[in-house]
Length: 477
Image (cartoon, rainbow, N blue to C red; front, side):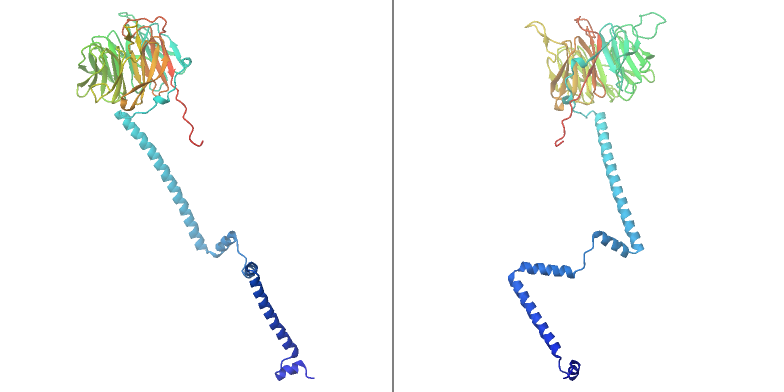
């Protein structure tokens, strides 16, 4: 019997090999039949099997860190230097962009401030602050007592640290705003007596302080203007030239140029730094009662019983004449370079624009009426003040009420905001430069005469705090 090896040599297949091939063929048919059965049975099982088969056939995925490490290993040293240089340049670019944005923001802020400064200098800036002011509580008012007779005038230093007050007792007192104590007293001097320190011998009617706080000027019924060093209250000069009581003084802002007016109907110009007289202007038909000035080379005057307000253009030596009140105009104050407020003994308060010869608005009987029914007379408006470049105005009379007002849009309306109880004649009013407080000079008599006397009044300086209403919380906070 031939062996399997011999059979292969003869070219005949071995019996075991043929059986194995047949078995392999049967398995392939069975597998193909099984696949067809599985495909007929449902695609889901087929999908799962194909997915498993794919996952088995594909290599495992590398994580991002592994890929980055692989890339770093693959990049050359030169490529790494280039990549790091690009990254550094990108950081520099971002830093420069941030600096440019910061510079642009600062420039916008500076431009805004410069714009406000220009508008302020031109008198066209009007900040709305009146609505923010809360009604002052009577218990918050500080009363400073030191004068024996009625307060006639007062000024506040530019840094709001001190107050100068003057009175009919011919004295001047410098007060500390913080403590309320007297810092210095310039006492009354006897007229004609020798060897006395400098001072006033008659009623002091007006005062002014330069915008740098260096000089203080005071004028009295004896026709004199005394110039003081504001810090030490040392007497520097005495200006003579008016022929009657000096009733108004004002420094031009940013300079040492002084304007004065008098019951002699004139307006005079002085240079305080050089201790010199400049010129005299005439035009009023009666005693001038008050004067005010800002940064422009001009001043405004209240003409008293001649019923006019006048704007004096100093370089041109000309004047503009305004009419509006029916009584004697006793007080005036500039709100900005283009608007002013005035008060008269007919009880009216008027707002003016320098481009109009008539008031923009007149508020009649601003402090009410007095007297028997049928014979009522208005309370005189004895003082006015305005917070510079804002819509806030204050007025005083002798009806035991100081009043705060808001100027409407375009200064064509005057609305009452608050009343502050103050007994006596409110002869002078001044706002602090920041608007944090208002100072009132109160007396038993009117500053220019003795038509009435209020015995229960105190001759005092009253500091009235002006608190702002808290801002409402932002939406969503």
